[in-house]
Length: 351
Ligand SMILES: NC(=O)c1ccc[n+]([C@@H]2O[C@H](COP(=O)([O-])OP(=O)(O)OC[C@H]3O[C@@H](n4cnc5c(N)ncnc54)[C@H](O)[C@@H]3O)[C@@H](O)[C@H]2O)c1
Image (cartoon, rainbow, N blue to C red; front, top):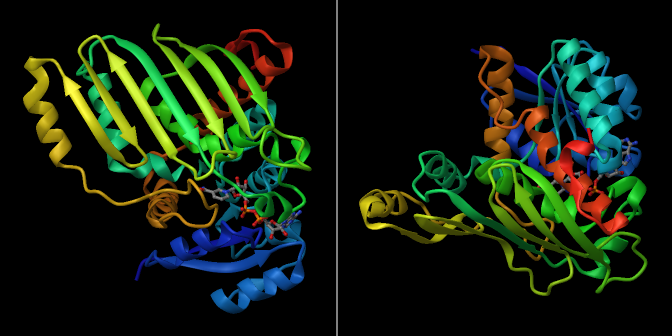
């Protein structure tokens, strides 16, 4: 039997369940230990997944019987915990968003590299079929020269969601609101498909929640490095949530992606056959967290856990490396900086 790949998990909240289930789904995956500042929560997790509780995560990451650490804590802790785990020689699978500050994300990447460990960032929507079809088609020029790459990431989170944990809705622990938390997946996918953004002009506001410091809506104009323009909207205030809607237009065609389904694919005559065949290949399955933070499919986490193990054992390329995870954070950081300054911001200013 293949040697076990042993995980420690930090944080036993909502997303830890996805990591635990995904590890359990691997033939060689083992959960060794859980760590959480709330002992009761860790105990519950440990009973369910038959693992040890280690109160201090710093002790957990030095254990010899752990190969990798899943970082499932509030976003503001990701950098510190990932860097410490890398220094202890553990591979890392950190939840999105990988850090709050861009310089911390850069440090995470460097420390992982210097210590010879893999750093994977969970962006499970990258594993879906439709965005990969679009990414390939864009690369092959199916839509011609890109004109617009728009993303509407309109979610709903009720007040109880923000009230459920002290870290939510704060700049210091969450790093922002609808853009860094709900918008993070869609922004990652937008860049994954369209390529990087050169500059951004953004506005943010808080319109539907009380007692939160951060934005629950954002709107921005993007200029891509490839010359295309884009409109980006994020929200945790639109009820019910509409989820992720992407509109991509080029000189030869248009594609619309709604959550994980391509709902429209119109291209010039010469490419139409290819497009029809491509569309037929898409399997439909709802994959939305548009109105709830706890209801979305597990498949992406299973694939990313498997990918981390393969990256360590066989050198397989990570689905989302630290460098890749940093791309959306750079855009999000620039969005907040633009909103703060009231002017357009070049992303490369924020290195
Ligand atoms: N990939 C996705 O689709 C997805 C979905 C939800 C959340 N997330 C991300 O996962 C992270 C956690 O979100 P969540 O919804 O699970 O939050 P949560 O509040 O439900 O869980 C966080 C857990 O971390 C624990 N914790 C806090 N400080 C700690 C510390 N110093 N040491 C150990 N444990 C500590 C808390 O007690 C809590 O149990 C966030 O970064 C969020 O953006 C990703």
